[in-house]
Amino acid sequence: MPNATIVGAFYDLQSAEKAFNEIKSIAEKALKSSITVEKHILVEYSEPRFNSDVYRREK
Image 1 (cartoon, rainbow, N blue to C red):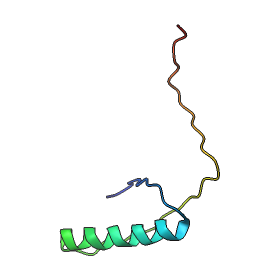
Image 2 (cartoon, rainbow, N blue to C red; image 1 turned 90 degrees about the vertical axis):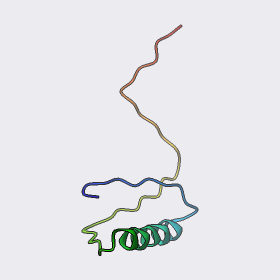
Image 3 (cartoon, one colour; image 1 turned 135 degrees about the horizontal axis):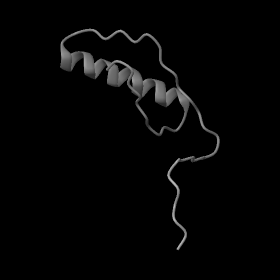
Image 4 (tube, rainbow, N blue to C red; image 1 turned 180 degrees about the vertical axis):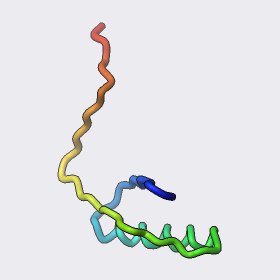
């Protein structure tokens, strides 16, 4: 998956990293090939935020 973004909700960063490693292993088995991950970024958000370029029309 070149240039892919995988999003998930986890209890903590350790859980997120464990899940990432597990899904990588599952994908390698399904593809019958090794996968090279050049970089990955895990981010912990402390509070929810949302921003969109779609504006809601006032009624």
